[in-house]
Length: 236
Image (cartoon, rainbow, N blue to C red; front, side):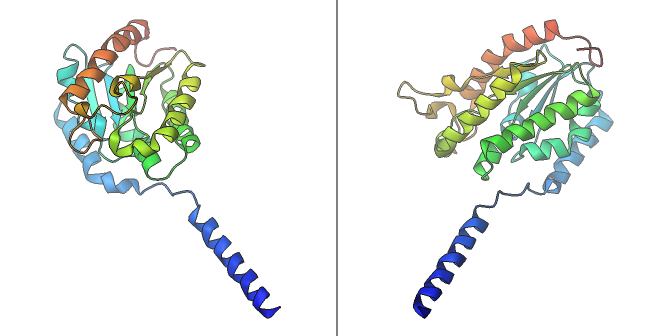
């Protein structure tokens, strides 16, 4: 009996450890990006900011995108910062999103969140929080969500990533101010696996050819959204 009680206690403790290990990951400290956000503010203090811009915001895939060269005819602002999660974008929104009074926001983030252990539902909930934060003060702004791309380095996360994309797509269907831009198929080979020729050596970030795919696909979407958008600060 004593041995059985010891065994039960061990199993109970093991179950407790398992539950503790299943605890959802906390949001990372946004202050790890303090210097990057400061650099944005310093740039803004020395340069004129375009009116009614197209604001690109999100993680490193935005930061590395030469958006001014890709969209030379548009008033583009790039505020991507590498390694960021959606919670980071929300935290700094009052400094790198809202001040610009954007006409259109192009948003790409969430992949780092999934890689950090967050669920698809949580990533979607965070994106919804971002949208509601923006529309609370700027109700007319259009927001384009770039679907999270498949990549070889994060291929094991692809099933969960597809769930995020699906939730966002459904969310966007209920609001004409929201656009879901899914170019995922363009990054897959005929066998359904990521096309390595579109990525850098890390098989995570896009190379020039990969960004060309994004640019070509996004350009007509932006033109359509801009044509149907009211002036920044106007009514939806």
